[in-house]
Length: 312
Ligand SMILES: [Zn+2]
Image (cartoon, rainbow, N blue to C red; front, side, top):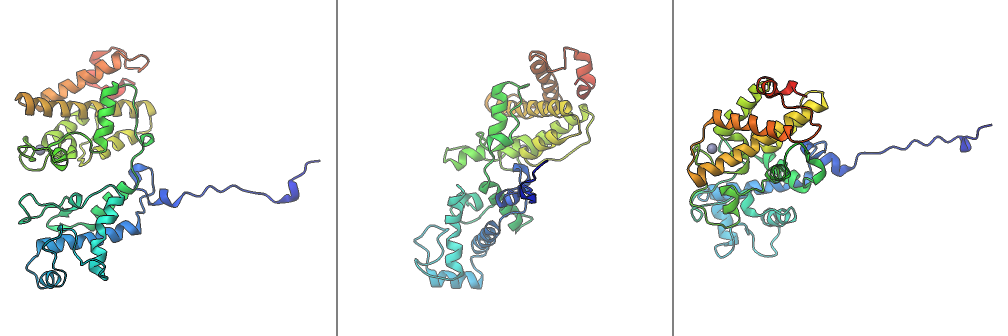
């Protein structure tokens, strides 16, 4: 006779943690976002409004009441004052808790005459974009969320890991760390600031190169604006695990080659040529796979050159 232990059937329910629900999708969450971060982003928008419309009536009133001429630009209210301006003042504390600074939101390169922000899209401060950034900062990407591919050399994989977190020495990243740089504008397109995401995804050189590589792989054209996006795309592409791994390896090779090409251009004066970069990517990834055991591509160069994703 079987005992059912009193008949009470216990079902273990593993609820998804609230933290995981709030976390952005690309770090394994459900992407609901945090209300605290939304509030922070809304308050930070006032920084932008205040700085970019200094002559507006309300801005002059605020200046008159709080007289912040002797304080850092992000300290708006008098000490111990209450109300919305002290809330705006506390945005900086909220940012510090996320390891961010006021200058990550808003900065001026000319002593405060003009202000810039990566969260301004079409002249409008984009609260949703900032909130998304704050949500990502609240959930630092752990090692586990990154694919430590063993088909690419370790130095390449750790480069990609750092690039994913924006931690490679782009001109913008150097400037943020107070290292003097002659210009923070991309020397290829001369159109945008040289950030990690710009060099590796959104610059016209990166965009065209990625599309030529995708074309080689038989994939449709795609526009990426962040390293994260292109990594996630490769990792989630199709259904075959072997092909996901192969495409990810190609993407790692592409980002690595774009970075090397950028360094050759800036430090050695080598002129970048898209077709040449693509050939280097094909040859580099082929070599990685050929000399690593059991990766399945064998050494069929011809097959690799014409239909790489069939190699697995
Ligand atoms: Zn560029």
